[in-house]
Amino acid sequence: MIRRNLISIIISLIILILLFIFIVIPIIVRNSITFQRFGVFMNIINVHYFHDLSNTEQFGLRCAKPFRIETTNDEGNINLGAWHIFPRDDYDECKREAHDFNDDGIIVLYLHGNMASRAFYHRRLLYNLLSEKSNAHVIAFDYRGYADSTNAIPSTFGLTNDTRNVYEWILGNNVTSDRIIIWGHSLGTGVATRFLSECPDEIYPFAAVIESGFTSIVEASHHYPLIRLFSFLPYFEYCFVEPLVNNPELNFNSTAQLSTIRCPLLILHAEDDVIVSFDLGRKLYEQAKMLQPKNVSEQTQFVSYPAQYGYGHQDIYRDPDLSKTIKALCNTIN
Ligand SMILES: *[C@@H]1O[C@H](CO)[C@@H](O)[C@H](O)[C@H]1NC(C)=O
Ligand SMILES: *[C@@H]1O[C@H](CO)[C@@H](O)[C@H](O)[C@H]1NC(C)=O
Ligand SMILES: *[C@@H]1O[C@H](CO)[C@@H](O)[C@H](O)[C@H]1NC(C)=O
Ligand SMILES: *[C@@H]1O[C@H](CO)[C@@H](O)[C@H](O)[C@H]1NC(C)=O
Image 1 (spheres, protein in one colour):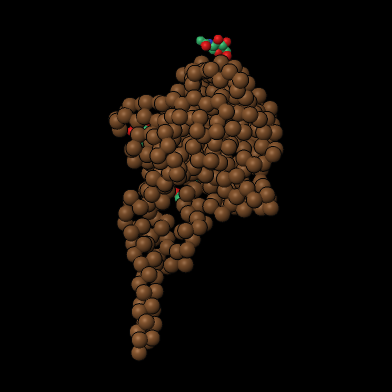
Image 2: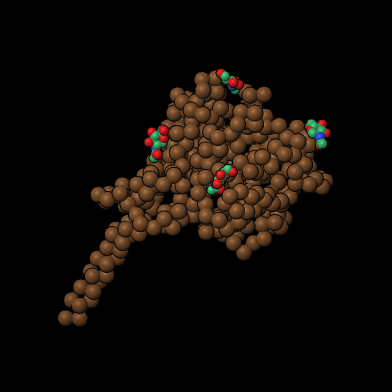
């Protein structure tokens, strides 16, 4: 008797959990912009929440200076936390101020993916590598709503504005745009393509790296591990996809920007990427070849990494040839 009760309790519990996962969650996702925004930006997940990001020494960067960028528009004040990581040549002295670009090194403006901050471990390892192996300046910042930047609501427009403001700050320091590479990773690739599509000709960067990127966030969401769990539901499109398609604040669509991207793209993608599927990186490359202006698309390249290297979504910095690839990119253009 007791046993039969126990079994029926367990079965009821399982049914309740399944109902919650496959009915309640989809209803919440469909109706809550807060939830949708969280799914896209994940800005409140931050392992360095209690760290002071302006104290760069604790992050194992060889030579870096913190700085902040403040901008004002109709939306109010936006204040962004940022780092200037200096090239290898400065390691001994490390006395320069953030905003000193007076040498001939390339400048990488890094646009991070969703979740965490500019201090996330694989991002820092990439900055160090670019600084050490490519003797580059790296500018890394947090978008609004992330880390120590103004706690404003993130959106496609907001993140693109933040990027433009940081870019203009770089140019304001006696820098010409032919030294600048935009480097987007994951969600940051969606920001990068938007920024590039809107950037005026006179200040166009010379190239962009698209690391582990997607064609559109809508296509990426179909492959996204947690969301894929729901993909068999007849109301999957209605609950998980339509809210992204219909909201321009969430709909990052790189495909739509390609025809107006006027610098070469270097698209990097690992075959074992389980977050943004490899197929989307290759598809973006094929679209870029077709849609970018002809004289630019000729220089757009795709580098794929076999699954056995284990680079996954965020470890392409481990490629021992990465600095050679960057060098080749600089040489084809300059
Ligand atoms: C982005 O910048 C434009 C131009 O300054 C401004 O009109 C718009 O309100 C900004 N949007 C956001 C979300 O910051
Ligand atoms: C601006 O950059 C040029 C070339 O890098 C350099 O010769 C010049 O001294 C710089 N000017 C200032 C004011 O720093
Ligand atoms: C993305 O843009 C392309 C090209 O403009 C368009 O065909 C496609 O429907 C867009 N996708 C989404 C999800 O908005
Ligand atoms: C491509 O061609 C356009 C005009 O057709 C020109 O303005 C632009 O500078 C060229 N870009 C490159 C990278 O050669």
